[in-house]
Length: 487
Image (cartoon, rainbow, N blue to C red; front, side, top):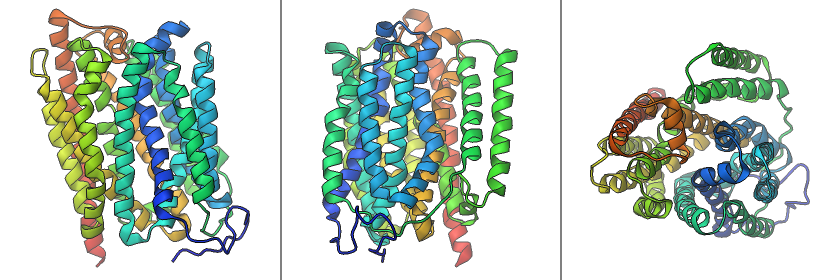
C-alpha cells in the first residue's frame, strides 16, 4: 500500500487527509488527457488560418506543432522528477495553470516568434500534466485495477480527439483560429478547481537533482535532427541540412554518454535493466512514430486529394473516435484480467490492419475506406495505450513512478515528433517536396493527375507506418517472452 505520510510540504496532503475520491480523481486526470488530445488535433486544422492571419512563413507555422512536441519531449522526465520532489499533484496542478496561461497568450499572439514562443510555454504546461498523470493513477488505484484506470485515460484521449476535430473545423470555419486556444481556458479552470478539492499527494517525497547537461544535449540533439528532417520536406539535401543532422546525432550520442555517467540522469537508463521495461518503452516509441501522423495523412487525403472541407472531413472521422472512446475502458478491464502483453500486442496488430485499409485509398476510391480505417486504428490504440501504460507502471519501482511516467511520455513524444516529419518525407516522394509540405498543413489542394500521384505518395507513407507498427508489435510480444524467461 502507498504510504499516506509525506516527508515534506504537508500543506498539500496532511497525514490525516482522507483517501482521495477515486472517481473524481480519475476525472481530473482524464481532463488532462482530454486537453492534450484536443490540442493535438485542433491546432493542425487551424494552421492555414494562423499562417494567413499572422503573415508567417510555412516553415514557421510548422514549428507551432513541432516546437510544442519538442518541449513536451525534452521536459517530460525532468518534470516527472519535480513531481517526485515536490508532489505529483502539486506539479499536476501547476501544469494546468501554465497550460492555461500559455493558451491565453497563444490566442493573443501577433507574429511568428510570439505564437511559437507561447506554444513552447503551453508545451511546458502539457509536459507537467503528462509527466505526473501516470504516477497519480498509480497512487489512486492498486496494481490490479490500473488497467481499467488507464482504459478511462484512453477514453479521455479518444473523446478529446473527437472534440479537437469537431471544434477545430467549426471554430476555424465560423469563428476564428484564436478560439482554438480560448477554449482551453474554461477547461483549465475547471480542472484546477477539481484538482484542488479532490486530489492529494500521498506518496513519499524523493529528493532528486536535475540533469541540466542531459536536458540540453537531448533538446539540442532532437532539434538538430528535426530541423534537418523538416528542411528535407521542403528542399533538397544540402550542406546546411547535413550539418544540422550530423550535429543533432552527435549531441544525442553525447546525451547517452552523459546519462551513463550521472547518478541521477534525465533518462534513467537503469530502468532498461528491467526486462519488461525495455520492450514496453520501445513499443511506445514505435507506436508513436507509426500512428501519430495518421490523422494528418488522412486529412491530407480528404482535403487535398478529395477536396473536402474541414467540417465534412471531421464528420467522416467521427465514428472512429467515438468507438475508440467506448472500447478504451473495456480494453483496460481486459488488461486487468489477462495482463498487458496480449491486449497491447493485439492493439498493435489491429493498427497494422488499419494501415493496410488506409493504403487502399486512391483519388477515386470510396470515402468509406477512410472512415473504416480510422475506426479500426482507434480501436487498436484503445487496446494498446492502457495495456502498455500498465506494463510500464507495474514494472517501475515504487520510488520511481514519476520518473517512469516521464520516461514513457518522453518515448511516446519522440515517436510523435518523428512521425510528423517521417510522414511528410515519405508522402512527398511522389510530387515536389514544397507542394506536399503545403498540402500537409492545408495551404494547397490538388486536382486531376496530381491528385492521383499524391494519393500514391500517401499510400507509400501508410505502408511505411505499417512496417513501423509491425516492429512495435514484435517488441510488445517479446515483452511476454522475456517475462516468462524469468519465471
